[in-house]
Each structure stands twice: as C-alpha cells, then as structure tokens.
Length: 334
Image (cartoon, rainbow, N blue to C red; front, side, top):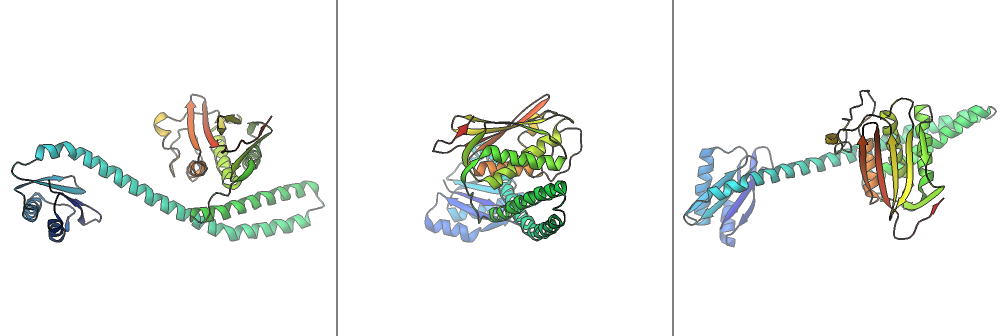
C-alpha cells in the first residue's frame, strides 16, 4: 500500500519525510511532485494533494489523515481506508507530541549547558580577584588568630569554588569527562556540610556514617551535588530542626540519604523537582534560588551511573542517592 507523510519542520511548511510502498521511479515522482505542503492545509488544498498523490502513485483512491503538524496519505486500488486511518490518528498525534517534547527538552538542555559554560567562564576572573584580596588581608591579620582562621577557611572555600567552576566549564562544553579516583565519600560530605554551615550561619547538618567509605568517584562535581542537596534540605526544613545525612552500603551501591523535617512534596510534584527552574514545592515560605540545584544534582548522579529518588510524607522528606561502588570491592570502615 503506497503511503507518504509530511511533517511541519518549519512554521510555514510541512516537508515530505517518507514515501513507502512504491517503486523507485514513483517514489522520485512523489518527492519531486509534492515536496512540501502548507503548514495549515485547507480541506480544498488537501483534496488537491490527494488527487496529485493518486496520479503520481498510480492508485485508485487515496485516504488522508491530517493531525495538524503532519499529513499522512495512503492509496488503495478501490476502497478508501478512512476507518482504519481514524484508529491511528490519535496515536500519530500522541507520537508527534512526544517528539516535540523531546526536541524541546534537547534544545533546553543545550541552552542550559551553554548558560552554565558562560556563567563558569565569567566567574573565573572575579574569583581570582577575590582570592588575591583575601591573600592580602591574611598577610595583614596573621597576628590575630581568630581572624587568620576565618580568612584561611574562606581561602579554602574559594579554592574549592574555583576548582568547581573550572570543572563546570569543561563539563558543560563536553570537554571534560568525570575524573574518577579512590575517594572517601564521607570526607566529601563533611566538606559540603562545612560549606553549608558557613552559608546559613549555623550548624544544621548531622552526619551518620562510617569513619570511611571509599568509592571510585569524581569528588569535585559530587561535592557540588551534595552541597545542593543540603542547601535544599536546609531551605525547606522547619526552623530550628536538623538535616540528617546517612551514608551506608546497600548491595553494590553506596547510598547517601539527606532528610529534613518539613512539609511534604505533593506526589504530582515529585517528578518535577529535578527539572530545571522547577520550584513548585509548597512550603509556605519564600526561598531564594535559581531552580537549578536539584537539576544539577541529578545530572551529576546520573553521570556517575547512579540514581536519585524521593520519599516524602507528612513531616519528613528524604532524597536518596545510590552510587555504584564499582567492580572492585571498596572499603567501608566502621
């Protein structure tokens, strides 16, 4: 059965994307004779196109399916096949919707990667300037132990941020794969918790973990992911409550769980929280943020071959991250 389909690749035209069921000569005739259709085709124009396809394909009758963004024509010897076409019309429309959604998601991902690369690039110079200023202040205040400790700690945090920005820039443009090494995940979490405490001005994070949990990971992006999880938990936890972090071994994975005491995430929002710019969690309190934190977490976890999921009920929300330990046995010391 000769079949041909046109799809709206531009705003003003649908382009011929496939011809099946015809010999090479007639396929060429259809491609040359009806290469495009108007994006909004009228019933009169559709009848004209059916006639052209009937002549070019050498068939007796032609049935048409118009789903807005696409037109499908099928020819037969005598009887129209309109009833059969109607049964697949909704399926074709759904396929096209999914195709459009996938294309939009890919475009959004590319724009986000470019935005991340741009941001990382522009941050490098100011970070170097701030670091130089902190070095100067440290030289002037070495006689004051308290101020010296604060400045040294700030320099360490700035160095971590600079390393993260460099990695983010290379990763966003696709020039840097994960640089895995034998790393203590507990230490990575402790560093992230320390940074979080500096940001919120109080110690809100409690860690329950073995003394050491060594796995094959890239510490820089993973530390960023953990810090984003902690920021999110602290921002949505009830005032005065602690955020609990638990690290344990589960089969071939090391599982990191971050739990806060606060309003639950509605079930219909749980799939959305990892989307970029999604900020739908109903806490009743305004929070600052770009809406990219959990999106970055998911990207980092998946780049490690891991997975992330949510458990949320009245009073508690927990983000779980499972990272594969690797083929070799890694150390978990009590």
